[in-house]
Each structure stands twice: as C-alpha cells, then as structure tokens.
Length: 289
Image 1 (cartoon, rainbow, N blue to C red):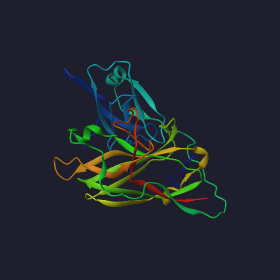
Image 2: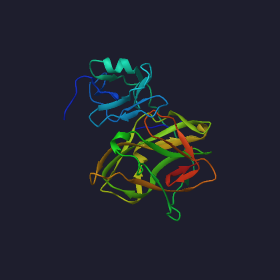
Image 3: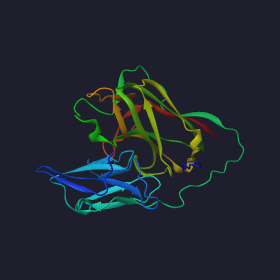
Image 4: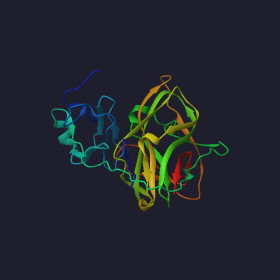
C-alpha cells in the first residue's frame, strides 16, 4: 500500500438558515481530543452533487436543496480521522462543534532492502501540442467557492514497487493568486476510485498565478507505491483559493485524447466519480525496482 513515514470569526455551534429554496448548515469542525480546528475536511452527501470542504480554520457551510430527503447521509471525512455521518435533520439540529476522532494505527514504517532503483514516470509528463485543456471551472459555473472539493486526476497502472519522488503538472491557465490542492491516492475497483490510501494529508499551494511546469517535491513524505496494490488513482482536490480579480475562475491543466479511460473526476467531495478517455498532464517522477 502507499505508506507515509513522516507524514475570524469562529462559530461555536452549527446554525441553520432557512429560506424557501434550501436549508443551510454551518459550523466548525474540531479534533475530539485536542479541540483544535481541522482544516479542509471533506463534507458531502453520498453519491450526490452536494458538498464542500471546511476552511483552514475548520469552518464550513453546506446548502441542502429543498427536495433533499431528510434521511440522506451527510458525510464528514478527513485523512487520519474516523469518518462520521449525519442525516440532514441531525445536522441541522446539532448544537455544538462537529468533533472528529483521530484514527489509530494508521502510520506504518517502510522497510526498504538495498536494491538498484530505476527512474520511471507514472502518468503523462508532457503537454503535447498544447491544444487541449482540462478546466477545473467552466464558463457556465458561476461561483468558484461553491464547488470546493472538486477533484480530478489519473489512473495509474504500476507493476513495480516505486518511491514517488516528485509530482509534476503542466498548468495551462491560472487566474488565482493562491490555490491550495490536496493530493489524494485511492484504491481502484472496476476503473473507479474507492478507498483513500494515504494516512496523512498532503496539501500544497500554487502561488501568484503560476503557469507552466509545476513541481512538488514528495521526498519528505516517503511515498511508497507497491505493485500488489494494482491500479491506483492519484488526484488533486481543490480546497482553497484566492482570486486575482473578482471574476477569476479559470485554472486548467494540459490534456490530450486517450485510447483508454485514464481520467477520473468528481464535482464535489462525496459525489459519484466520472471517467473519460483523456490524459491529464500530471505525473510522478519515481524510483522503481
């Protein structure tokens, strides 16, 4: 499995805002033991396009449509913590902070025997002719912040044991002074991401509207991808942004058409996954046996 060795305005309770169209729950998420705020928690309704991500200070706001069934599950999920669920009614009636309990025994040491490692690229490293792009936000999507948690990435078929040393992305457009993404890895079943397999979260920031080849050093996290995992999905998830201008919304990566279904995405934290035949310009520089 992937293993990691290293790796205002506060609300005191969940409150409810109700209008004729929807219901809104908002509040704060904290660690049940330390009582510290937990940033970037995934929040969403299972298999539905309803969800968000908590802020760096643990605050969240989620809107429920008027036709949502009261018994639908609202899931709170974060790497390193036990997942909890509420029905819509339970969440709207809750008094106090949402508390997540740390999950135990997640970290495992990596034991590496001396061997000769070979450099390998997992994913698509180039931008090709630069004619195709994947936009995280399209012209028709009105509000960027309403889509927090949007996620996109690639399926990786790996038949070797590999250390992932560097993430590389070819960015084709960027209208943000600051963008924070979470790097996620999932097991894959029938071509669809399932369970997350990173025990510690990796959040990185892209600053000052950077465009071009972006590199993120992964060596401090000691990410080890084993061949017995089979196919895995590697994605980046939008968790926070600061616009350059009030109408900024575009951030895109180069892509190309593919003969195989290697691209996966979902519009919200707990929404259903979508796949398509395209290659995203996202890869990992690796050392494999």
